[in-house]
Amino acid sequence: MDEKTMVNDILSGIKASLGSYQTAITETENMQLRQTFQQIRNSDESFQYELFKTAEAKGYYKSAAPASVTEIQTVKTELQ
Image (cartoon, rainbow, N blue to C red; front, side, top):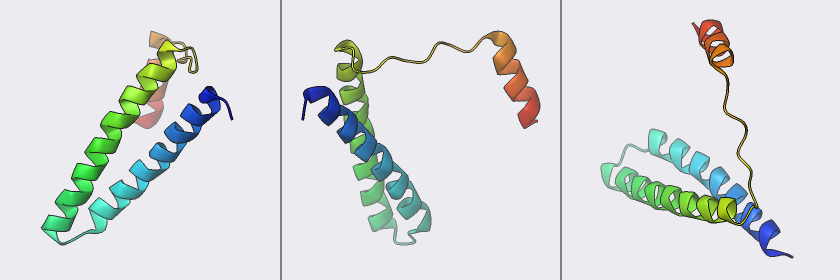
C-alpha cells in the first residue's frame, strides 16, 4: 500500500470517528465522560488537520475550487 492510500485511509477513518464522538457527546449525561469524549474528539480534530495539511503539501489532496458569490447566495437563499 502506498503512502497516499494510507494517508487517505487514515483521514477517512478519523472523519468517521469524529462523527461517532459527536454522537456520544450529545448522548452522554455523565459530565466527566462527556468531557473525556470532547478531549478525544479535539485531539483527533487537531491530528486530522495536521495530517490533511501534510497530504495537501504532498499533493495527495486537492481542494475544491472556491464557490462563487452567486453559488453562495443561491445556497443561502435555498436554506432560508
